[in-house]
Image (cartoon, rainbow, N blue to C red; front, side, top):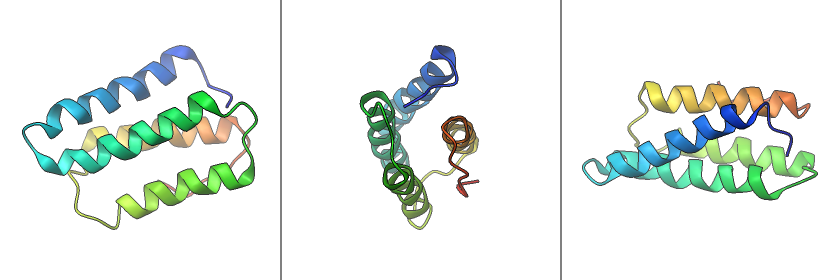
Length: 96
């Protein structure tokens, strides 16, 4: 998948690590860690994403937002970064 920049993607990975670290003390961070890790892996592994890949990512975000999770400013920042990356790949998302 096309990344905006390595720095941009590293920020997404950093947020994922922060969700993981915080989940050790607050289980509400665990869904954010699991989903951000899955999405970041998809970004890393999929060279030529399809519309189906984009919709899967969008559904992962929408589904977590239907469950109880921390949902703080860091999660919103992750979604902003993800939204920009999806846009860079020509997909107009509705995750924010």
